[in-house]
Length: 338
Image (cartoon, rainbow, N blue to C red; front, side, top):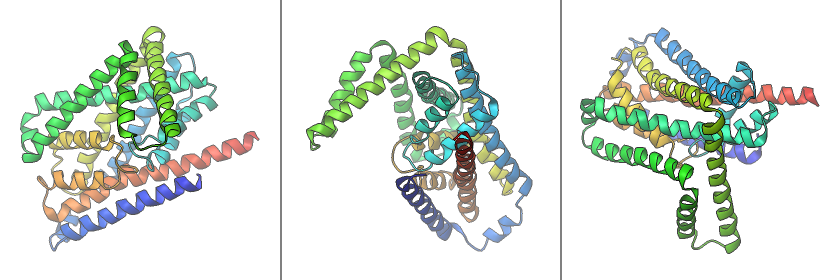
């Protein structure tokens, strides 16, 4: 890992730890010990195993999408690729740093750079489509659970609808009207970079145009010649997100609390959308505060902080550990090739 990446990793972990300590300070009380006596370690172990299963769904998505383009990849290579992606994702906003890692590892598996880029771009598209579909389902089928969030529900419904509508509009424009999307992106970029140096603005505009062209090419490639890859990809994307959402309920059961399956489904969906926004590295702080504020509506204050800590251990710190392990495997592989 480069020095700059290490710096961001340390900052992300430090920020997350500080927020978690503050949350524990304000939530732990005399009743916390009584709640901890009800802990069931088997459910906590199952939460870790379910998270591993989630990563397996992701690995199968990559494997199937690459296979549909004519590039067979072994499952364990794909799984290690996913693990390696986790470390980079933990230090970048919106987990964007994981994408170059996946492209690089696909390229090492003899997938041409253009096709590797197409696969990774379509993964992002499928994530957006799956989250939009799940959000739409949740808003129609789980109305009471949305209302149970109180005043925050109106704000989150609004944000979620913007997310759903935005995904659909951007997908349509990128596929059918890339010229319109380029003009919109150009105007937005110029508006937010009015005080930048002309050379930097020009470089940004060229990069945006290139990304839109790559996105358009990726969609066309899969729609025309690899429809099975899209179908398999969407299936494993849905399984990925459902599995990730269920993990929170398993942690709750491990703490002797009711699983709150439906409430947790809505909360985890909201958090997943918030964590896709490029706000902080690895969504540190955003995830902890968001989870605490929403789960506090359903859990005793004495245990909500402990739950949030365990939730982040499984879905964030465990990811970093898996990423470090995978990076060592890759370094050893490259060294043996030389």
